[in-house]
Image 1 (cartoon, one colour):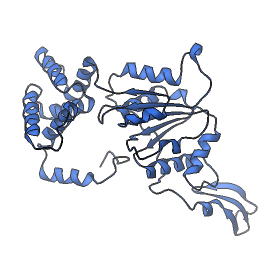
Image 2 (image 1 turned 45 degrees about the vertical axis):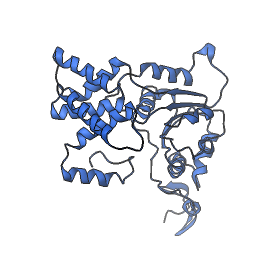
Image 3 (image 1 turned 120 degrees about the vertical axis):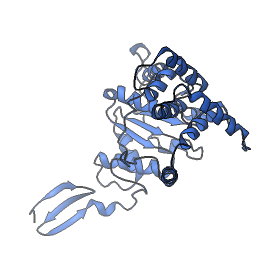
Length: 318
């Protein structure tokens, strides 16, 4: 079988030598510490939503950090940028939109779900695998690849919210490469070169985002004015705008939505909660509950089952 064949690869292994029917020294025998939760190409970077809106000033700030104008171009060093803020502010979407727009400026782009050390290690192992590292044994193989390849690679470390995870342990120690971290943990400002807090959208962008999800036809003047009021009541907060817009479009209730919203917020505030929600959380809870109450019992059961699944890599068709 393949006499004298040597040094060729097959998925998950490298056969170093074949003589007659004898196979010698195949690489997979060394892979004894493959991280849990690993699967092929898990670091493929997704794209931003087609409805991405605004945040132009923030995208410019990030671009100037990674690619400063020539007079201000500092010495070569690894660059790490932190996007932090409340959940639902759009941190992940901003990071994905940045890499979508400027992907030609990076040699490779990797996405790492950084909500757990298991996921980070599995992703680093995947980086080794997709780059054909011979004899890759564990997650450190991916870290070594990043360390030794002096390229302008980009890593998005998404949802690095757990303060117990030491992200520094998973940064390659080198003077090249680029990293964007998204997190609700503002303390990560201490481990990065530059950071930026993501807050409300500017009013015009907030209204545009709402209408992208809410309207499927030209609006009358009164309807446009109502959209302005809704966006303001939701503090131009991205997740609340998206949830409200989807409900309005489905139920065709642009002119009456504020009544639903105010009633729902009143009911939430009347509950005896351990800690009263701030204005942003209240807006998100209210828009979510309005939609939730419209679901059938079977639909609610399905969503409750889905809540036990990891939110990454679930096929859209499901």
